[in-house]
Image 1 (cartoon, rainbow, N blue to C red):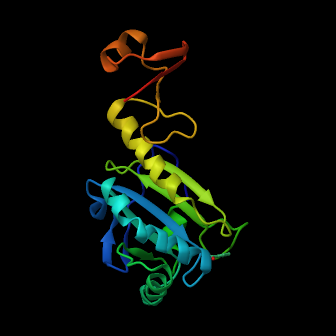
Image 2 (image 1 turned 60 degrees about the vertical axis):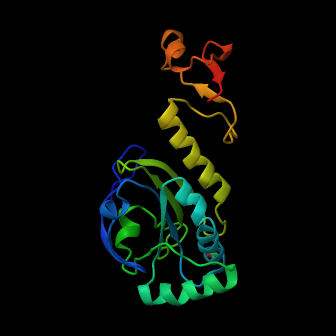
Image 3 (image 1 turned 180 degrees about the horizontal axis):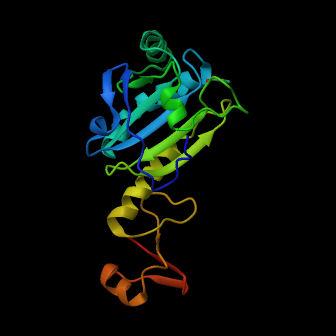
Length: 209
Ligand code: BEZ
């Protein structure tokens, strides 16, 4: 198994999900993916995360991003669990969950960390762009639920960076000042950022977009 790194092509796979069989790259089409794994069905932290993803379905759609969950159980178990997720989190789960009972996809994406558990996936996140490139990875332990504000924020930052050739500073929020990357010279920056910029240091230039 190879370590997956930023900029790698996300491995393709065909698998059963709660919404039928999918081939990942084809299913993704021209969208971004939020691909996230869970230790197991019918566990408390996972239930809240699945619910939160469903509640945020409008926010993911606005960002042309399709959620895809994974847990190392069967479609039958997933479907029973979805009933509980909807009931307890007051939502309607409307994205596929990969059935990975044989751990094939979890292995492919290095989601099993034996030091944490030999059999269950940790909380991995892969943000994948429409060219199928891995743009962000995060790995959370089993005992800590993910921060969904951060997941949306990072998708916003990646998409803005692609569109406007900028980087984002610590704790950036949409609407906040952005950074002109050092790879863009002042000469080039005059064309790309006619609104000008604030030069705090020659390597630290901020602007508004
Ligand atoms: C959970 O998803 O709730 C969970 C899973 C494994 C360990 C602790 C919590």
